[in-house]
Image 1: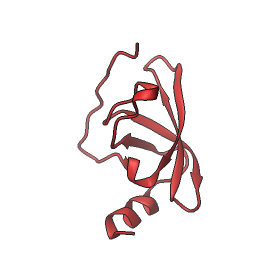
Image 2: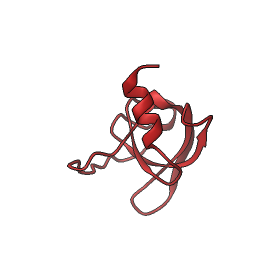
Image 3: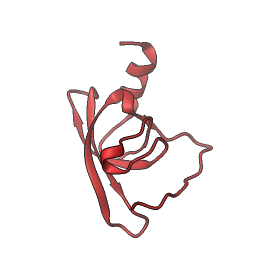
Length: 84
């Protein structure tokens, strides 16, 4: 495991907001989408992440590897996309 992955895994906890690092087409999720960690697996090797619309409707709860998400940085802004 690289140092960057170890650092990321240590930084993410339940209820943290995270950013998706790759597309997940089967759920219409794109790199950059923001989700909330609802469960941490094996000390940060993976996560259950919930993605919701801006009005609170759950789009998906997805099991992800630690390399598929990253913590939100201090100077980032949110974006939106229409889920069809």
